[in-house]
Length: 114
Image (cartoon, rainbow, N blue to C red; front, top):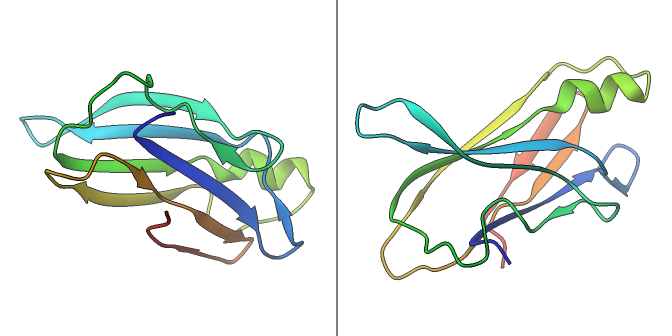
């Protein structure tokens, strides 16, 4: 399993979000963002493969970019947020981060999961 995982739930309809593209980025030495992984959520809304399972998590700034526009358009729903960006810091001694996203057309929430 990847050192960084996510789980996306559509709380407006009470279902997991399948097929949502998620991009993992890390902050580079120049302050810019570099792609470190990419994938799509499974039928249960989970994405466990953003990084190779053997990749050791390096402390630093990371962000998850959830490309929500296509998901809502496929449902025929107009949404306020075409993408959601969640930035967090990985610290030394923590080997795994689970960052769920609770999503609706006009709002979202996230937290550090287990």
